[in-house]
Image 1 (cartoon, rainbow, N blue to C red):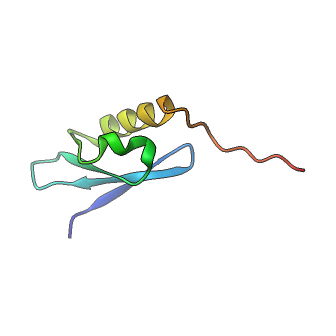
Image 2: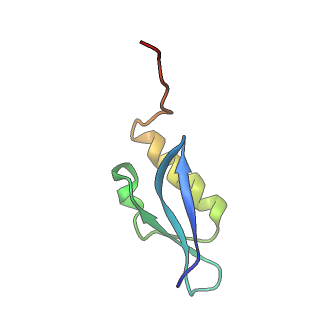
Image 3: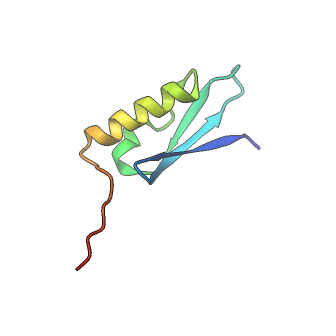
Length: 70
């Protein structure tokens, strides 16, 4: 089984970074529609992957969820 890291942006689970068999590169498994375009993207490290996923998620108009009392 491959090792993976959960990727969250602003408290929203958007996918997982899966360590591939190719050196230390990571493959992104998208679970949120806003980052679906990055599904199966391979990046060299976790920092680069998180930055790209975060930028894509926020570009699609998603912001942190805030709760207001009624």
